[in-house]
Amino acid sequence: MASYSNVTIPSKIKAWLYAEHGNPVNVLTLDSDVRVPEIKEDQVLVKVVAAALNPVDAKRALGFFRDADSSPHIVPGYDVAGVVVKVGDQVKKFKIGDEVYGAVNEKSLDQDEVYGDINDKSLDRPKQHGTMAEYNAVEDRLLALKPKNLSFVEAASLPAAIETAYEGLERTRFSSGKSILVLGGAGGVGSLVIQLAKEVFGASRVAATSSTGKLDLLKSLGADSAIDYTKENFEDLSEKFDVVYDAVGQTESAIRAVKEGGSVVTVVGGVNPPAFKFFLASKGSILEKLNPFIESQKIKPVIDPRGTFSFSRVLEAFSYLGTGRVTGEIVIHSIP
Picture 1 (spheres, rainbow, N blue to C red):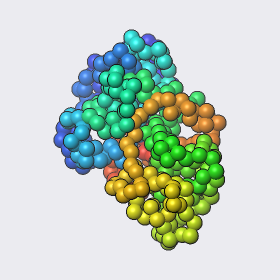
Picture 2: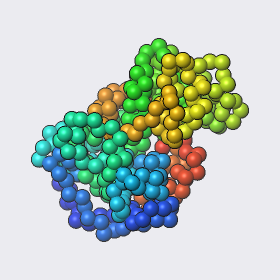
Picture 3: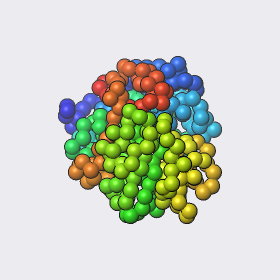
């Protein structure tokens, strides 16, 4: 990795952006004349080395959140791994040259918001300038030092997915000795819910659903039971669970698989009681808490076998994301 201690920061950079909502494959363009974002006192400037794509990026481009979104022109991307090249006056946590990662595409919060309830802020006027660019300005509270054992590609695959997985489990008050069913266990969030439930929260039993070809992956991640949703209806099983984590949008069925008094959490689609839904409010502190589990390899990134794309192939990456067949995460790397 090149040294960034004496880097000359350009005035203009390359970035993928869209000026109107629509299918990202149709509306995204590569612009070589984008101004480098200015940093505020609590921000650092990150030279982006790798950035992940998530379903929320496609939904945002399609206009699903237009009422709460920033106005185009928008550079997509929430996840980043890179190197700090400039620090704001109030930043004490990082220095130039630090290798960092995080889920970064939130608006900058006012002081009262920082100390108040920041739930759902990631979809409340998120930044126009996301991570599909050469440089990104990021609040230091959203970042953590990159785990030493991970490449930039591996690190970029984690932040939004692992923070979503962790916070969802926290909100269900999941704890040692409880059982959990994960719907969509081979996806970016689901694959990490399985690992966190087992290795961090001490689940007594973990079951997860996927298609036939991904059952072995579920078992390798720690699932005690891998359910093939193409052959079996999980809601018809006699076994019920303390928690059902719905990462695919099957809340009505999920409710039928939970024990009386149990919890159903979803991050996709509509919600019917007793299920609840939340949107991630990014926190670097979650990554800091989980770094020891990552560095000891108890928690491992899951990247699709076809899921690494160069910066010039972002449109192909969005096209593949749109198939709904992605295992784990998609990562853009070799960013200029």
